[in-house]
Amino acid sequence: MPQATNYDAIVIGTSQGGRFLPIALAKAGRKVALIERGHIGGACVNVGCTPTKTMVASARLAYLARRGADYGIHIGPISVDLQAVRTRKQGIVEGARLGYESRLTAAQELDLLRGEAHFLAPKTLEVSLNGGKTREITAPLIVIDTGDRPEQLEIKGVESVPVLNSTTLMELNTLPEHLLIIGGGYIGLEFGQMFRRFGSQVTIIQRRPRLLMSEDEDVSDEITKILREDGITVLTGTTPQQVEPLSGGRIQLTVRTPQGEQQLIGSHLLAAAGRVPNTEDLTPEAAGIQLNKEGYIQVNEQLETSVPGIYAMGDVKGGPAFTHISYDDFRILRTNLLEHGNASTQGRLVPYTIFIDPQLGRVGMSENEARKQGRNIRVAKLPMNAVPRALETGETRGFMKAIVDAETQQILGCAILSLEGGEIMTIIQVAMMGKLPYTALKEGTFTHPLLAEGLNALFMTLDS
Ligand SMILES: Cc1cc2nc3c(=O)[nH]c(=O)nc-3n(C[C@H](O)[C@H](O)[C@H](O)COP(=O)(O)OP(=O)(O)OC[C@H]3O[C@@H](n4cnc5c(N)ncnc54)[C@H](O)[C@@H]3O)c2cc1C
Ligand SMILES: NC(=O)c1ccc[n+]([C@@H]2O[C@H](COP(=O)([O-])OP(=O)(O)OC[C@H]3O[C@@H](n4cnc5c(N)ncnc54)[C@H](O)[C@@H]3O)[C@@H](O)[C@H]2O)c1
Image 1 (cartoon, rainbow, N blue to C red):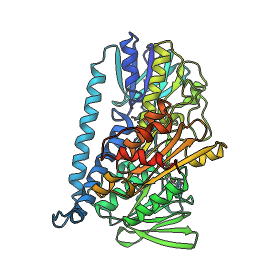
Image 2: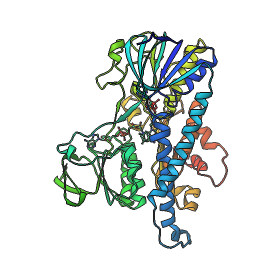
Image 3: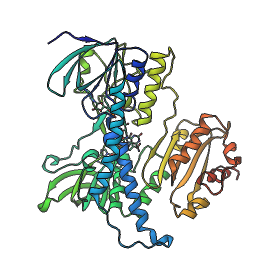
Image 4: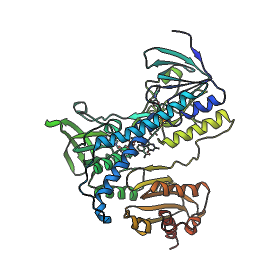
């Protein structure tokens, strides 16, 4: 093998964090190698946020079209062309990917290596290039942004049936007649509602007692009610036992429910039971990088691994798995590596939005978390049917809820289950960032009739 090429920095993975950091390092005059084995842009652009939210938009249109008559608009029978939905999705994904690719290839002092990285030693990597050759490269600074992938199902008989995951489900050209979904988390819920709206029968099988177990009970319960209203079968506290193929390509799934064993028959099976980190192929053990028991890379608050000079960002380090967190990891590393700062993950707000309809926008503490910490709290809650904008648009499902510190009047967190719940949550997040007391939102003048105006009424519920 030829001699190793020396770089100032190596970044592995081109996701939201991984593609910005090498550009910033290169702009600062460092000689940088960026390695990517798959599509440029990582999971978010190619198989995550971008394609799903594009398809969620198609599904919402189908939903609204079916509700046309409620608004006095008659448009005839509705049909869904899944191939056209997919083509629209592919166009948006490819456009985004090409944009990222051209920015990376145009960057000076940056070598984009298309292949898979494996550690040979703490500061040395071998890259198996996509063309078949290998290269050895070294750098004093290495940043790992290799992400994660769908976890495979461990159910008796699983090898005897085709199992879809979040990536392959989006490549179907024909609509599943009955989609069985294992897992009642983000992916199970977003795809469950999407395919129900496209016209599939959908059953969600959730092992834990509630959907979205880390949310408060009232949030989980309201979401379950909404999904059931939409015609989705939601089975909670239910464990898949065995799966087997039936004639005609159908699939039989035996589950243990709180009421006893039950047989479900579906046309397709989706694994949405969590994700596992992309660490095996990376051979981090060759560098002495410590992993936790689930295989995630252990980092400190500055994102440094157990090996000095090697950092990890994004999903591969465990914890909240969102694109904006991967991007914030980039900010931390840029501050510390290029600006002599001391940024850390400590105390950062982790907002997120689940793109069901109505959306669930969440930030800060849940009521359960605040009570567990023994905080003296007050809880503001308002059903969406008390908000004029929701009534006018016919989108009254859900509620707004905020947790307030009874002594300081500061907002500790919120759950907004509403049309554009993510945007409304962000208004509260900004108030939290500015450390405003809840009274500032209670008394603020907001445009009538916006959904945001509902924040006045939400916090007024604390007057009584
Ligand atoms: C269906 C779905 C929907 C989602 N929706 C949202 C959403 O709406 N909002 C949101 O915030 N988050 C969403 N997420 C989560 C989001 O996609 C991830 O949190 C985000 O992509 C994490 O980025 P990352 O930095 O960890 O790297 P990733 O995006 O996981 O990218 C890692 C990259 O590293 C490459 N790689 C891996 N190993 C190697 C190796 N050894 N050598 C070379 N390259 C390697 C991979 O090919 C990949 O391109 C969704 C995820 C999924 C699956
Ligand atoms: N809108 C968003 O931001 C968004 C959307 C999609 C995915 N994501 C990210 O992707 C990650 C992965 O999503 P996910 O939904 O796969 O995982 P998840 O961890 O959110 O949910 C998995 C669910 O499957 C259940 N489960 C696990 N094993 C099971 C089994 N054998 N039978 C039945 N149920 C089982 C779990 O109880 C859990 O509720 C999320 O944590 C999230 O960070 C984010």
